[in-house]
Image (cartoon, rainbow, N blue to C red; front, side):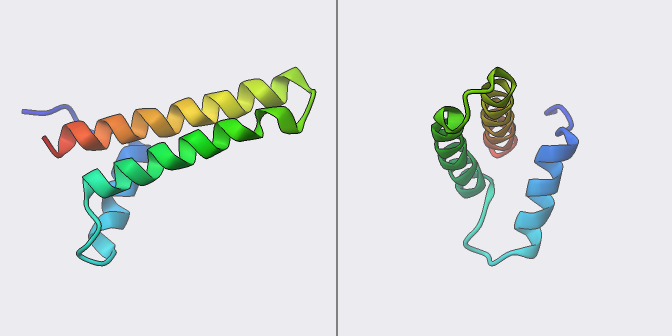
Length: 74
């Protein structure tokens, strides 16, 4: 039995259920990974160190949600 999803991953999974049949956990994970990569591009937009830390934390959060969704689909 797999572990319960985090609230963030569950919210994405719930949104998938309300979306077009094309969407599934694998597609959502790919979209989140792409968003994570683009989020990291924002690091140079501010010289404030807390901004960079926040951007990298957000990118990591998206990656973790994607990993959870992929695992729940396995």
